[in-house]
Image 1: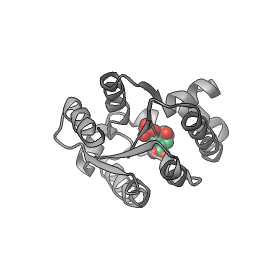
Image 2: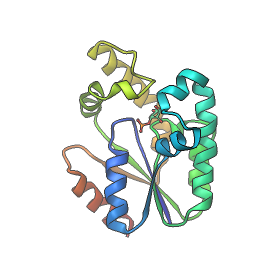
Image 3: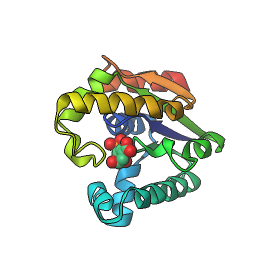
Image 4: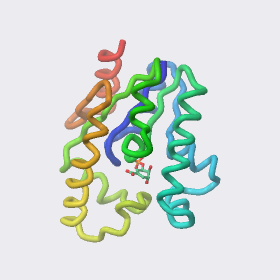
Length: 173
Ligand code: S3P
């Protein structure tokens, strides 16, 4: 079985994925890191040199490559992965893939992303905190249509990574 973790930027997909994989004795892959290795470039550089459309094409290609070739892997997606090119449909229709939406409140996302926005090309240019909050609110709302299609929804607010990992374990096994 492969487990796919999805949710907005800053929801904790990577930290949770790493700990979950260790607990379950599964392999761990972060799709953003995988893309960076394959393309030999950091994500912001890919956006800068080749643009978002190229990034989304590669994201879909590598998502499928991973899902089709692995059997015991936790995969953390990028925040936008489920929302493009039929990726969510692909995840849903692939046998033995369980998808989990890590749902985080707007205030928590804003708090985390204010200090981490530089490495995220979609929000790096937003300088005011109020503008960032408005952008994230709207963006999460638009993307929720896709996120909500995940098989399981786990709220991450006021929970430690350990508690979230425990909750996923109980939900899936
Ligand atoms: C993106 C999220 C990023 C990365 C890219 C685009 C998005 O991943 O894939 O910058 O569209 O939300 P994280 O969610 O890991 O930050």
